[in-house]
Image (cartoon, rainbow, N blue to C red; front, side, top):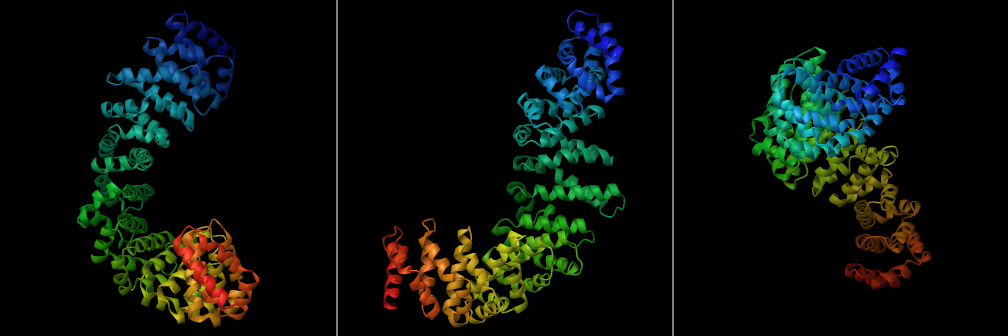
Length: 566
């Protein structure tokens, strides 16, 4: 401790007028103390050591700069106080200027210094958004990208650059600056040269956050990253070592991430004829769960526009997905089930695909997952069925009269812990009625206790769900009011309609459909009495002057009906 105190005093002097030799010995002493005892960082800050150390960064002596960089890097390591002190003393600015001026120099000694300075900045900014943002503002990113290109032969320096990129790439504000450099080319070039698993993993750790940016996605695709990833997959797919399994997962996950960008996805799709697209399709029937998952997710990502969806359905991709799902019905892999259902849901969006997919037996296979207890699978199952029956009356009737399905939907309508499942169940229940317009479907829904859920759905905060519920309730009233009467009364339907009509925030279509429904329930004596007791006619009367002509016209018709039946 005594020797450290002496070193501190010497360093304070050294920053002004001491000799190089004494400065170096003081730095050696300090470094030795810091390496031996991590608890020395705070005393160094408290003793006021950081400003004189930062001053030493202005030295012209290579060894002094090297030792100072190491000492500052050590003080910043895992120490908030150390980083803050270096920040206040302006250390980051000086170091980033050094890196900039030395970036072209390939002399081994200068490369050693560059590696130390990069390491210091890495420790300085690690897990600290504010300091990372400062480095971005200082323009460190373009400099480090240049370093990667010029010094790719230097392993230590390359690693330091990669770790620094990993720190900075997590920050959203860095992506724009990365996109303005040739980072994609440099990383892909570096990746192609690697043979060791650890080195590839380091590059993957930088690629993953960068690939979240759509501009960089496209740059990576154009730089040839996809070919590298496909090669990794081919090399590791049959591997049993942990590192093979890890690389296969990372490479296939990254491939899926690249397909999330519209431009990068379309470039790889190449009208459905792209070699990459074909290779990814071959993953679906694979024996490897990770590849099955990535293949299904890739199809879901390719299926983001109607043209792609239509092409894929016409070329038999649905059958591949159904075969995959069949393999995972009994105690299957939940992530694979979820991914395959996601792909089918997306493919079912274009109208021309619906009947083709229904003929291929998609609904039958999807129904096999009705007993799943996994909310993500339930959610996708519901979404897929809802997409399939949209405008498909026959399919809606077939599914709507399936007692087991409707029973499960009613059960899921009460899944309060899973809002997504609850919402989708309500929407599918409504869709079965709306698209089939079938008395048998209505009776099945009434029998299984679905009416009260549709009444609750009419009070949803989402207008589209309110509207879907009101239209379905209107069809129930029109097709079998007698059978639904008891449930309508029990669910306080008339009271809900009164609130919707009275609420100024209700959209015009909500008011319109509420009035249609009131007219439809007037044939029921108990509901008729409720309409009278709640003085709904007064609310309707006011709506005759509504600014929306459709609403005001329907209000006049509804008022006439209510007056005639009063």
